[in-house]
Length: 482
Image 1 (spheres, helix red, strand yellow):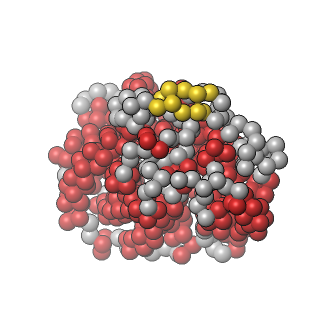
Image 2 (spheres, helix red, strand yellow):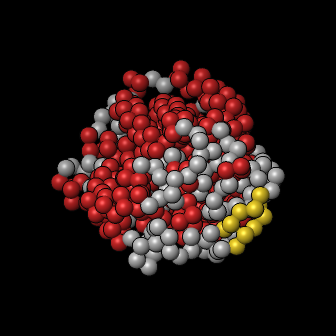
Image 3 (cartoon, one colour):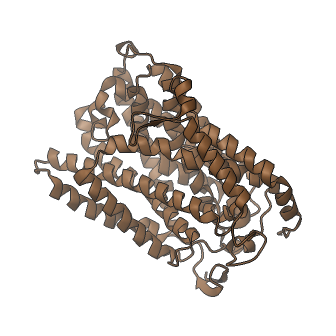
C-alpha cells in the first residue's frame, strides 16, 4: 500500500511504496511512517545472522591466530571481542523511535552540518568493506575458474569484477524489505554449511601442533580486529535496519535481536576459522580456506561462499547509500547505490592491478576504530542524556529545528569527536600496517592497542562534560510521540 510522506530534507511531498519485498524501495533517509513499519524483532535477528554467517568471519578467526597467538589466546580474543556485539544492539535502539537511519540520528549530537564529517568517515568505511567483499569474490571466483582449467590473469579478474558489480547491485537497489527476506532464508542455508565445515575441520585440528604464545600487547591487536570487524564495526549500520521496527517494539527485544543475530554466528565462525588455521595456515586468505577441508568440499564451499560475500556486501552497499544522503548529496537512495557501486568497483579494480590487499585490509580494520569509537561513545551518551527521546522532524529538517545549533554545527560534539580520535591515535599499534604507526601510549606499554575503547570512553566523557546541560534543555523541549 502506498503512503504519502514529507521529505523534510527537501521539503517535497512524495508518494512512496510500503514495506514490500522485491519492489524498489524509494525511501532513503526520509522518516518511515508508522503504518509502514512492518518488521519484527525476529526479522532483525535473521537479517543480522544472514549477514554475519559469512566466510569473512572464518578468515578473521584465522588471522587472529596468525598474529602469533596460541589457539587458546585466540579463543579468548574471539569471545571477549564479540561481547561487543552488544554495541550493535545499543546502536539499533534509536531506529524504531526515530524512523530514520544511523547517520541521520547522528544529527542530534552533531547538528546537520556538523554531522557531515562523521558521515564522510562512515561512507569511506562502508565503501571499504564493500571493496573487501568484492576483492574476496573476485579471488574466489578466479580460483574456481582455475579449478576448471581456465587460465587466470588480470583480464579475467576485471571481467569477474564487472559481473560481480552487476549482481551485487540488485538486492540493495530493491531495498530494506528485500534484504531482510533474502538474508533470512540464506541464514538457514549458511547454518547447514557451517555444520558441514565444522564436521570436516574439527577432527583434524590438533591443538598440540601449535606451539606459540604471544604477549598481552599483541593479543590486544587481535581483539581490535575482532571488535572492529564485529560489534563496533557494525554500529554505524544499526539504525539503518532497525528503523522499520514499530515504535512500540520493546528496547530489550530490539537490543537482543541485533546483538545475538550478529554475535552468535561471529563467535562460531571465528572459532572455526581459528581451528582451520591449525589444519592449514592458508586459511588466512579466502582462497586458502578450502585447504582446511576435504578436497570434495571445494565446489559446495566456493559457490556458497560467493553467495555469502554478496550477502554481507548488500548490507554495506545499502548503508553507504543512505549515508551519502545524510552527508547531503542531492541524489535518491537508488542513485546513491549506483554511485557507490561505481566507486567501490573502481577502487577494487585498482587494487587488483596495483594493490597489496591483505596488508591494506589489516590496516583498514585497525584505523577505522579511530573515528568509530569516539562517534559511538558520543551517540551513546547523547541517547542516555535524552532518555531515548528524539524529535524526528528536527532530524530531517533542512534548516532550524531543535538540532540546528549554530549554523548547523554543534562545536561541543565536534570537539569531543576530535579529542576522542586524538586519544585513539595515541593508543593504537599499527606498526605492521600501511601507513605504519604506533602511538606513544601504545609504544610505552609494549605495543598494546586499546584505541577503540580509549576513543569511545574519552569521546563520550568529553561530550558529557560539554553537553549535558544543553542536551537536558533540548530533552525538555522534545515533543512526546504517541
